[in-house]
Length: 147
Image (spheres, rainbow, N blue to C red):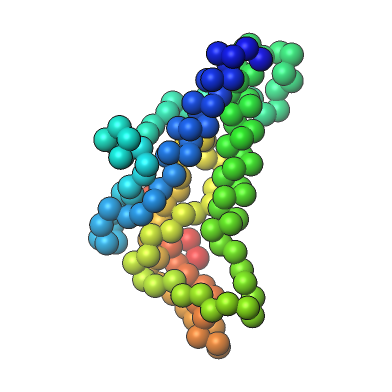
């Protein structure tokens, strides 16, 4: 890998990290807009044109650009899976956490989304269990509702 290719991958990683949603812009249940670090850095959300998935393609069949994209896509899959798992840690029987509330903005895990795209939704209904902890939530996204 040349220094230019390495710098390109580092810039892609930086853009990826700066595209992460920080908080909701408003409390309107129909508004799924969020603030990102990109909003503060460049004044608007960071967008990128999705590249084809190169993860199944052998490296010797790829151009130098496609190899860089393959490395970035590998980073994105690992980071998004590990990051989203950290957001929803379950400290069973150890710590009491606040319940989901109707109107909360949530990230919906979708492994088919391209890098720097985040599926967002609003909690529209919750159902607590016998211990009064929320066990089921109905989430409204752009593409429909999920339970």
